[in-house]
Image (cartoon, rainbow, N blue to C red; front, top):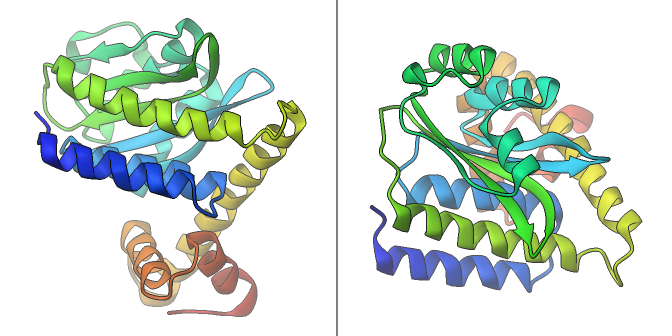
Length: 232
């Protein structure tokens, strides 16, 4: 179970980010990172709805991207079900759950045993969904799911607020930029991994560390790596 004081501090810091100079990609990445840390997860992923289909935007850690991309391609899995129904979808043990055979195969191959899909919604409006991953069988506690849903609701409020006078085209444009940023970051991870002889997980941590140390966005570091020859 999460530590209440840590949750309050996390929610406070996350809320402060939403009222600062932000972009969609940064907020959604921060959501995944904070949830993984707060609930001691093996990982977390965020997907957003673009023209009615879920698209994976950010995944922590990077090696779980295959699982997020599988859901994106098939529109099948706990995250997809949470998006369609507007209700949480919990799986205590994937090995015993037969709802999504192909998804289960990928998840188990990547070492994930338990998962939760949570809708990102405000009222009746659903803008995406997020996944919580655990490497062991996990009976998900209600308090943990409430804490995760609260952070997801905060991020949803940000996304809807970003529409600017309820113009859907504004939100779609920002979400599209977030997807383009994801592609750029993936390219940068590959370039850096090859340059330093490491795997993509280590390369991504190097990118994140450089971004934090220089107070810049991850995507800006990725642009430097892909287009300017930056090798950190």
